[in-house]
Length: 249
Ligand code: 13P
Image 1 (cartoon, rainbow, N blue to C red):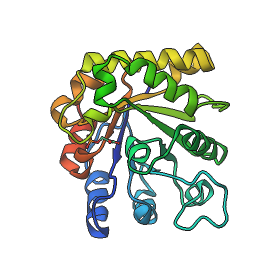
Image 2: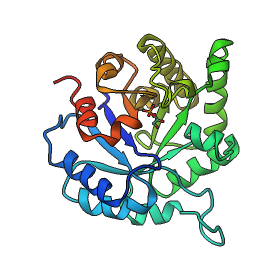
Image 3: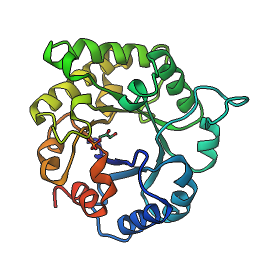
């Protein structure tokens, strides 16, 4: 049984007081302990979050990392720095990084490597644009993202998490049909099986992201190959985020 993950990607939102309040609201509420919860605040609130989360099971994630070890890289943050701060997981290849900040597959591949080599769990984000989906080329596109993103990467079971986030469903309110999301997560699992073997694929969590909210969480998360949700907008509201965690209750 793969434990479901509910992850909140805050993106570049909230101020320091709002961040503190949001964490306190989550950690002081009743939620389903059978779920693994991860929050991904902006870099500048990681230390605050780490202190707030100390005695809880909620894990801490970072939204990005630098592809280099250390040195003259103004404005960047290394995997080693994140690890030392108590960060558990890191997002790599989010579509906003790929499109707005021009990260290509080669950069993403190096970031995956950096994260894993420094003991972080890597959440590799994949997903096609609306045009690609309309042309029915989404499977080929996502397969390419997997092959390039994971090229020469040796991952152990549990170190890698995948998030399938179709770009057209991010922040649009337009959720992927749960049947289509399930089909893509199964497709991704099959690709992992060819790369790393059946056991690895069976044990790797594959999340869905893109306009997940309390109203659609159950239908998505009940699917066999959807092992959790990467939530954007709704993770900024503690009630909505908790309702997604407690979708079964
Ligand atoms: P929304 O939930 O706001 O659509 O964002 C999804 C996302 O990008 C999570 O990484």
